[in-house]
Image 1 (cartoon, one colour):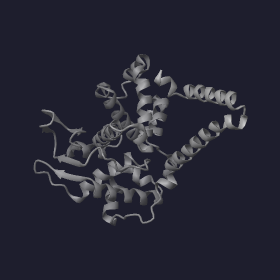
Image 2 (cartoon, rainbow, N blue to C red):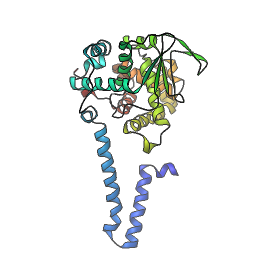
Image 3 (tube, rainbow, N blue to C red):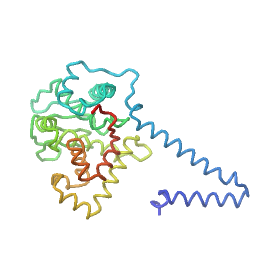
Image 4 (spheres, rainbow, N blue to C red):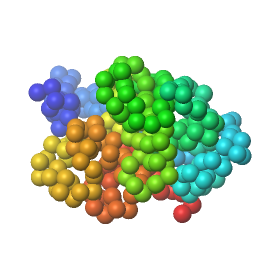
Length: 296
């Protein structure tokens, strides 16, 4: 019952009954229609705010954008085709976000791994690529990023991993070799950075009430719910499994499926769009991805 009255149809019924009651009680059409005007105004303002928050010009405008040194920009240009294809004004915004990312999150070396400036830039750029369509992109679901040289034993899970996200400790953990491999082979459909950072974004809205989520978190949440509908449909899920497009690990649970889907979205977008157009559109909207960011 609660779910029904939270829906559009439920809201229409409630408003209709409310209007009918006040018309009967006050015998005034103006007073009876007042709640409709008020509600319409609220939803109109809400629509405008959300439209602005998703608009690329608004999202990527900075009064005083932070700049990267030329050498650091060169690192991104050489390793991220996403960045290379961006219009110059969006490259400026990308640079700004990379600086802000490195200022907010602490990158910690593990097992003697040496974290050079180049490696820090690449980790930041991977996160910025995933969240580039989001206005509120610096999330609080993680604070630290642990970087191991390779396959590592996690004392948290008691298992060996290439990467993980721990919401309780607010950490993202990466194996550098596997992370770098995902960056170098852009069409492999395996990108450890996108995979683990997408888990962190999932964790960002899971512990927040809807009215406390940012618009970006809300869009991501809505996309996940739409993916859940596909996931829950055994016929559609079997079609996806039988396609052999997504690796078997994707079907471990909904969270893993969402993360793997995002990897494919960035790695082989044309194949993804051709094979699963409906799912492609869902992902595109959930991260507010725009073709007009790019020069080609």
